[in-house]
Length: 432
Ligand code: HAM
Image (tube, protein in one colour):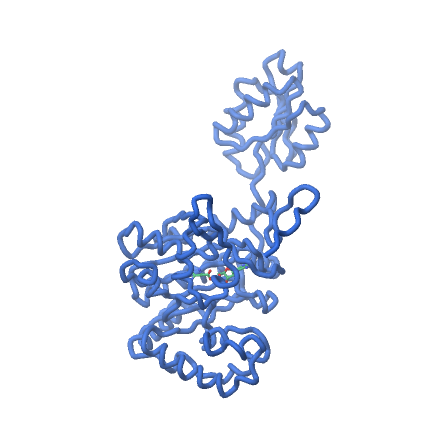
């Protein structure tokens, strides 16, 4: 492929990626903090793995039958000639780390990670997106499926999202899958002329992808396609019954979606997706996951069944916007230090206040009193400490109540930290 021309002007974030600046990023902190707390409550610890992996991990793990690997993966050769890929998803790296380190099972881990896919960017679809996810490896107990789904469902609920709907399906595991694929292929052969252009040619190689196709032609055909759930062998059928019973028992509403096959090759048995009815249907999946009982072996490890999910943070925030769910406002500083004497008092006092457990802000660059007062007001701080030349000379500071009615007070410089700590911590949110 020809090298694209060097663009003019200062460098910009690459197409399909975006910067998240403060204060927008406060919403990201909110999501991560809530998710981390929920995950920990269920026994999941944080896992960090490299953003770069050997490309063969994803080829073997996610699979050559998936668009994510064949069309969308960012691959590169490093200066040492190693063939690497930027992770397109979070599961294969966690399973790779499991195989490499063999922690005790079940190994339950959560993550927050960027993921890279060379897709056509549009609202809710980016070349770098971010996922919150959880994986539980080393058990095929259907109650673990229920625990994992409950973790995700509880998270959406805690965010206040009422229009997120859960679909479930089972992909079977071994012989039952082969029998089903035979039946599906035969059905698609009968209807080949009605399929969309892409799948009319390709349905033979990857019949499951036709079930996933969002185009109207394929949707109409697959409405009546054979269903995997009707082909499950006894063990897989019993597994799925137990999963659904568990969801019922926990009051987690869900619906069977026989065409839910998901786009990655590693899925076996339970698959699920959370879609927001408040978003455009093309990009309404706010999370999804499932079992991948053969993945550890596919990448050369021991047998280790597992299940997990990934939640797209950008889409989640779009769903929050659509449903009007907002985080609690970002915390504001307790104290703003206004220094008109050269900045040394602000430097020292702000740090003393922080060491004493309060949050403190200050202005830089020797601003005027008026400018510093305006910044103090805009910061939302509850109190300002003002130090002018007269205060400095007499060892005093002035404390101004920025939110309430209390009169200005003169306090000694040496006592102000203790006074403010007792005022502000005694009555959080109220005026000092
Ligand atoms: P996935 O369905 O490919 O699954 O992605 C998970 C979620 O990431 C999607 O439901 C969506 O919210 C978000 N997402 C995916 N691609 C994009 C994109 N281009 N732009 C914005 N958001 C996107 C996985 O990645 C699996 N690893 C999930 C999993 C974990 N399965 C088992 N364990």
